[in-house]
Image (cartoon, rainbow, N blue to C red; front, side):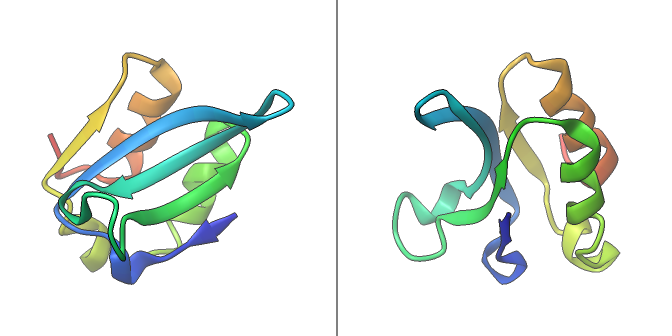
Length: 90
């Protein structure tokens, strides 16, 4: 797990991906960075909701409240993470 809260911005994306040999990861990216420095906000091994929420909740309420919008797919796990950790985001 890697978290870079200073890289987060008001517009995030959260998605799951398989990088190699079927290993799943959950990745949070800063949409405004568009692949440049600060693009990756966090990478988590696996897709289980509770460990990801536990780590994201370590980021201050103030920092998490700065997130205004999150792009995600329809996976319930991702929706749960977004709602619990970034309650002010749409």
